[in-house]
Length: 263
Image (cartoon, rainbow, N blue to C red; front, side, top):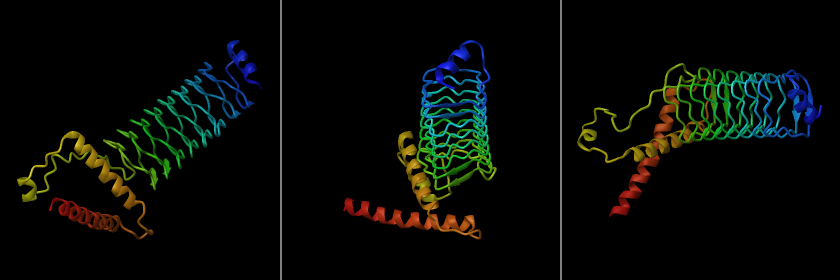
């Protein structure tokens, strides 16, 4: 089927286009909400700014497709193949992506607020600046995924697989983590560890300084954490001690450096 034929049939009221094959075509900016493209194969099709709102797209083949700024809100994309697809700035609010293949996909700046991503594969995907607030990522695979500036506020990450991910300014406030526990934001300005010295010396840090400090610590811990060799018998306590030992080593070196600069 050619794109002009599809658009004309849609304009005539037809909505069921399941299992069609469309190649080397353009549907850029097309209004195709509520369309049924289940198990269809779209190869080298320009889908920039296409309107697939509430569309039925389960098991669709969209490998490498360009869906930049597309509207996929509330669409059904379960088991869809979106490997290497470009979804920069796309609207995926409330979208069902259960068991979908999003490996190597570019979701930079995409809105996945409330999206259902249980069992999805996000290996080597880019989620820079993406909004996954209140999204469901149960058993989702995130391996070597770029999570820079990603918002996971109140997301459900139960049993999700995280490995060698890039964490920078990543937000997990009130999110349900892979271990089943809810992550609460630690306010560094109000921490009271019972240390007499910390009570005597109040750090002069504003909100911006605290955010930068937290971001830097998170990035440093992430680099160490994902590079620790481990086996099935490696305990969390062992990993924690190795990270702390390495951080203490570098902290001591940097304190000595700054001290020498003052003298």
